[in-house]
Image 1 (cartoon, helix red, strand yellow):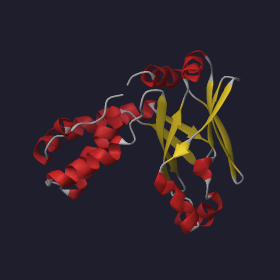
Image 2: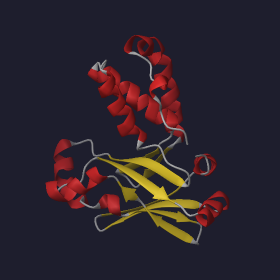
Image 3: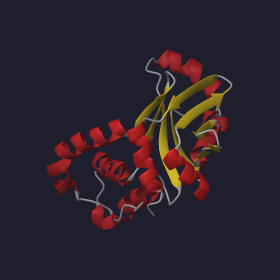
Length: 195
């Protein structure tokens, strides 16, 4: 899948002009790329559009104009775009009540290491988390956002196209299973082989 380049990024003025339409577009895109896994976890599968929007929003929020800062955001968020034979998702732990969140997050340390992709009855692939997720252990509580990738072999990619696919979270304090909707699975299957 192609990465975001500097020339893809609009300046603050140009982005403000198209932002209302882009927000609507991205909401629709993310709706189709989102899956609930149990009652507290949502995954949003990333692609060029979702990452482009995130970069533009960061530049807007921080009022960035310095080229080094803009390039840093591009480089950082491009890590979320999957390579060939990869799937990438942002995992959100959603606990609206702050008191409840303070109680539950310490019990979910390591949740990012227990997210599995089941491809039919043939393959199980464990998610790889970004380096920041490892800070959970130091801080003694799970982060509410984790960036995950699954790297598939060519055989697993072929099976992914033809088989039901499930996401499982198998953490000692959080167990949940969700089937990828067929439309989302087919979209991801197309993207898997797009370098």
